[in-house]
Length: 245
Image 1 (cartoon, rainbow, N blue to C red):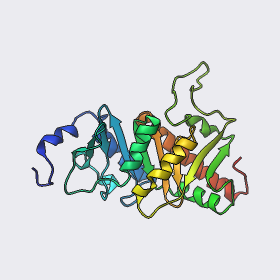
Image 2 (cartoon, one colour):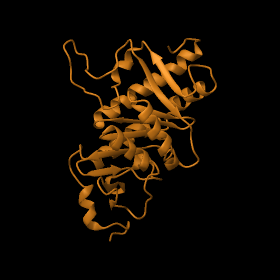
Image 3 (cartoon, rainbow, N blue to C red):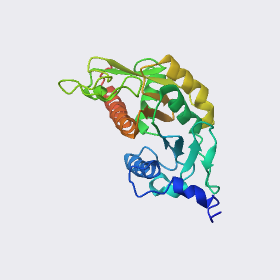
Image 4 (cartoon, helix red, strand yellow):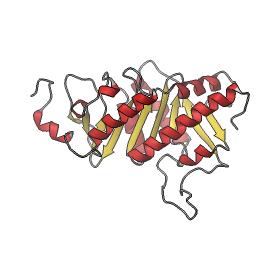
């Protein structure tokens, strides 16, 4: 055992000079997301499924200071931790990340506390735009960055169009679920939303934030960025009295 309370033999799971290794990627993504204001304090998180393992950011660690040694590793088949830094707590987001992996075949799931995500849920809740249970927006170019189901094909068709992505004339719909006192209690409603909205790449949590997934890290990251752009744009459109659809 080390001074941080974990098995020395498990360190090999998170130690690699490769910047694309999941443990290194989670740390670099968290630093980027901190810069965006998505993971203020210790909120939010990232998880990556790689081969037979799931790599998870811990709870309670400042995201911009995260290091590979802080990362939890779970066996995908058994759902048991095979690396668990005892000085840290596992993420309460874990059951929700697992939902994206099992129900959508995702390779990466990102959870942010984006202010723009929170604001669009409030506008829908208040009946000021759209419907209470869904964020809808159409005829905005950035919608083309969103895949159907979140893990759709990224194959490029003639003319540069991504097969499997929404088009400019599609209406993007992101379901909104109600927040709970404890994050893990969101699992049932998030799974229900995934089943009821098969084309969504994300689920908004009212007054809380958003969960976004993709077939790999790149797709999850770019979709999280596209969504945040659309959420911010929607808030600004509302200020100007413009409708989202």
